[in-house]
Image (cartoon, rainbow, N blue to C red; front, side, top):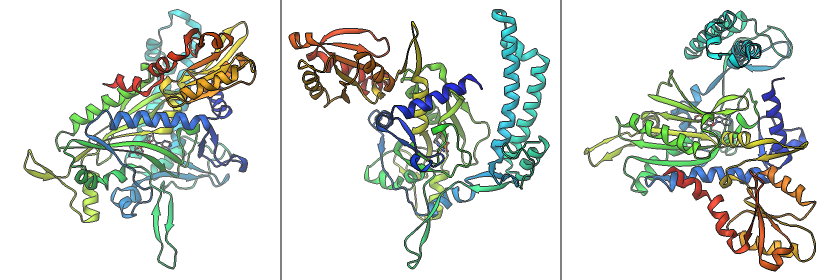
Length: 514
Ligand code: GAP
């Protein structure tokens, strides 16, 4: 098994062991692709949301927030195109009776060529040692070139079939490449057919005439249908944005990689309304602004890359993903899309209401164009969690599991630890906690040895441990232990609020964005 897979398994186990993420309905054997956040997970998640919300609504004069309902009028999803086109291509194996996404089966086949290439590269790197020139090897080695050529041929055929929505061709690819069901091992496939990803339910009792409604698959439409309300009541002038954080639901068929692809997840979306013709300028602005927001966390600039879309949805005129280096490769965390005036125009058409902006400078009315930034809270959580986790070798056979969270995102900011559970030290620890708890999430832990308590706090990413000892009772000083360096310094209790707030307050992150 690849080493990165082991690392990822360890990270998932750590997330459970320390109260960050639990499988939903675990005591009933779980519900696939649905997860619950535990006592530490919810704090980390809330801090991520707060960082995004405040960066959007407090640092931009022209962005306001809303919180729209999950249930919306079903015609909204007809207008947005989700009823007709929000589909995945599915295929069944007649022997195993299992259902798969046809595109994922083919992507896995493409990944096999990548694996073969990487194996050749790894073998050669071992053979040649330091003199190995990987780029040159990839360009010239005949075996690598042969795998690459086969990979590209499959990739091109697959992309064309997907773009043309050619389901018969997708099935033909599966047959031609002799892709077998991983369970039955057979090629006894049904035809490929489209499967809509929206969850449907009924509103109202049947006697009253129940109406089919959908659990929203994105929060964006709640913003579009409130565009007029916000613009008019907030007297907003273009350009302006509306931000929203909320749950979204998709009946994902292939659910894997932990919280990367879930059936119930959370999005942080912002729709920025601009004058027609100015959208590409604003697209570029948001493309850069959003990457800056990510990089300010200090997780490592090299872990991000843009993936600009070559093939665009019919309503978009530019789109890019911000990808993050997860343990399973670079993966999309956020999308930035220039959606033209498609959504508002569709809602104009389907609702029969005029959704326009009167531009006082131009003296004319038009349907605004939209730049969207859309990021998954759970994917953001996963990227922070994975990149901050370290199984650290401390020498002499000693190790610690530590989460190097950016202090502003850490679930617990400080832990107050009485050195011993007697002599008035626990009481003094409580007194310090009561002073700090108004500004910081602050725990008191008095069980086990001090070393074990430090490790427990490291494992949940607490940036500071404050140790209360006998000297504290004499001169009102404590030791302040720094999580990442494990260094300790003696500081006055009266200085704690100032020292901590400079390091852990969200402002420290937000100020980097200006
Ligand atoms: N309104 C645009 C929109 O929804 P998207 O690319 O489908 O675009 C945006 O989704 C973001 O939502 C993605 O970049 C990802 O972070 C997150 N996301 C999408 N599907 C998800 C899923 N099944 N589980 C977790 N996060 C998901």
